[in-house]
Length: 326
Ligand code: NDP
Image (cartoon, rainbow, N blue to C red):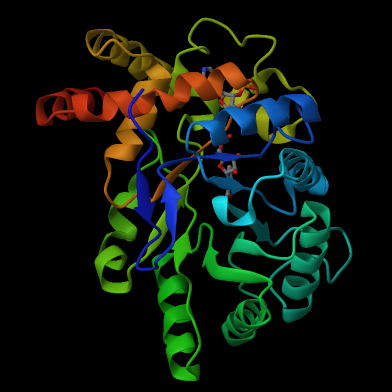
């Protein structure tokens, strides 16, 4: 297997593995802590150094599962980078959003669940248009000053909101967001490739991209049916039910047809569809790290081998893929 590649996170000195692992849906929810441990160990032993979380994932149980695993394995703190994201903390009026109160309280609660003194990366999980940007910028800077987090970033903010945050941080002599966490995959490209395009060089924006397999649709496993052990079969998860229903629409069927057309390309490159889709993300130099998800350690093993596929994505192959994606 090709060795892990490490990329600078934007214009910082921090290096993250180009493939990373996150806990959405899976850890603390869909699978038990034993599986979370197996996935994290397989990832870490193969060079993955970045693990992604959010206070909202399984209502905090993802952070607990990851924190327990890290403690059990006794990983040296400097050997990994861990994040969490703040926005949806709970039902109380002050338990969500990006007020100074929720950012600071939410981060402290997350650190307790993770059993850590600090996270490396802290994200604003969504924009909060009801809180003054200055309050949010100041609160994330407070976390950094107090050593509770080292870098702050955003998730699914518009280019305009990011620019506003940088402008305010500059005015106050504070630190602006270093990284953004957007969805990016073969089916979801507009914001990453177009809206953010001017920001990468100008602001040194790093990116930690999510759902690189479009929740597994790009693996081809949904082309015939919804496998019982897959996330789209989770009847008690509203987001998964929505994605599953989406596959029945004309747009969904078009996506599945494209996946079918990607199959011969993967076969020619002697890789799986999952590896092709992940390698395609890695190929983009504006991607700092591709956050993968896995409900089984064998998926981590398979996905790591996407690194072997990246050099095979020549100009011709990329054009072939583009012709399929339209
Ligand atoms: P993916 O789109 O890659 O989906 C991952 C899921 O696909 C796995 O849990 C597994 O589900 C299935 N899968 C993975 N590999 C394979 C394989 N080789 N073969 C078959 N099935 C496979 O990523 P996620 O949607 O999980 O997102 C990744 C991470 O991004 C999250 O964990 C989270 O950290 C972050 N994220 C951030 C968001 C944000 O708003 N900032 C939003 C969403 C995610 P199964 O086996 O159950 O079918």
